[in-house]
Amino acid sequence: MDKVIITNAISGAIANRAQCAAIPYTPEEYAAEAKRAYEAGASVVHIHAREDDGSPSLMVERFKVISEAIRAACPILLNFSTGAIGVPMAERVAHIVELKPHIGALNMGSLTYAKYSPKRKNFVFDFVFQNPFSDIIYLIERMNEAGVKPELECFDIGHTASADPLLDMGVLKGPLDFSFIMGVDGGLPATARHLEFQASHMRPGWTWKVIGISRDTWMLVSAALALGGHVRVGLEDNFYLPNGKMVQSNGDLVAHAARMARDMGREVASVDEARVMLGIGRA
Image 1 (cartoon, rainbow, N blue to C red):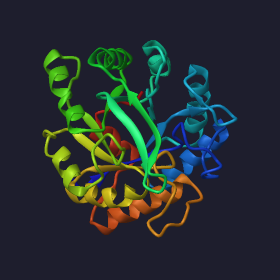
Image 2 (cartoon, rainbow, N blue to C red):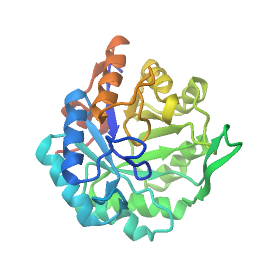
Image 3 (cartoon, helix red, strand yellow):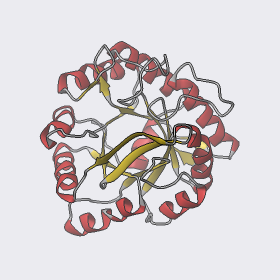
Image 4 (cartoon, helix red, strand yellow):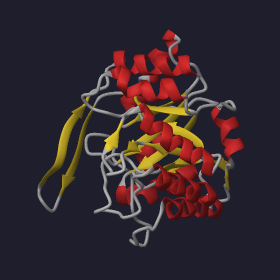
């Protein structure tokens, strides 16, 4: 595939401005960051909502004001997260049901989600992110009813294979769209070989992208581009350019990913081209 879809993970829900001053909190800041990403080559923006103080939010009204601000600033495609722990399923998907973004992201399996610090010889955090099939089916069914494209987030090969029974049940309907998250302790290691193994499970017409965490981002972007996949970059995943310089905005990360794509002979997909490739309508 010559065209590459660049997704921008605009803020995440965990990192804060003490770590990177560019992380947006207010709707106006989200809109400005989305516009920078769009102008640099992103066609999709992945959103975790925050309150003005930076705290994470699953409130429908908060997603509404953020998405309206972004829509007013640029025509980028909207992708809402459903990732949360200890939150009732109806609340995890309410913003998607009511606001109907173009894409809804959901996790395709349970995971021991951790971050290890070699310097401390201990884990920075360590918890189990539970996503049984019953919850996965619930999220997909609500997205289907809302006319929202599911994005299947996979931290391991078992998560990727979990699409098969859901296809057989008719819960999932192809063509499918996958995200391969790599570099989280408890999930797949961040190597080109593991990414190629994930990509080998794709079928004709399916789309996939890689999400690399922190310093592994750029190596995995390069591998995905070589394998014909798509990429996600943004302040949710990584603050730095390959030279170690902290970025001033999401636009810096998207611009570098776009430059890498062009250097490898691939063109950056426009919003309209990404719509066609992902099978998304005009709503």
